[in-house]
Length: 189
Image (tube, rainbow, N blue to C red; front, top):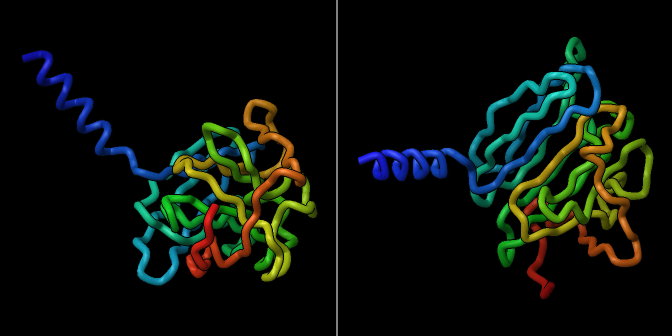
């Protein structure tokens, strides 16, 4: 009987975790609210609060395409630096990037993203501006991974425990922005 109870508890725990996740990591003492916007037809994802120096993991639906931005406590709600993702896209690949197209002056919101297990490739910057974020719609900065768990840092300061590896521009595979917006053409990877 105990075995069945344990098995049911493990099954329930597995069902409770999303197929895809984004772990939001605060790198400073500022509390932030993170707002999610899905592409048309995508399920809504609830706004979350990330306390200073804390982490929040958000479950994301299969195939979810959209973006998020962070607003510091007390600031007006306005899109800033965006984390963008297309989970489980063509060939099962997840495309992601950090975009400064909407508001390149937001240097305290979304900073950097990378796959949780491999820790590379990464998109975004520890300090803006940098060469690893989108500034113009035709920039080629979208990254790709087969992983479905991403890490996204928020705010300043940086924390060595969460630091992403430096991007090696010579070996990084980057894609046009259409891949993270769900409008990319299939290509052999």
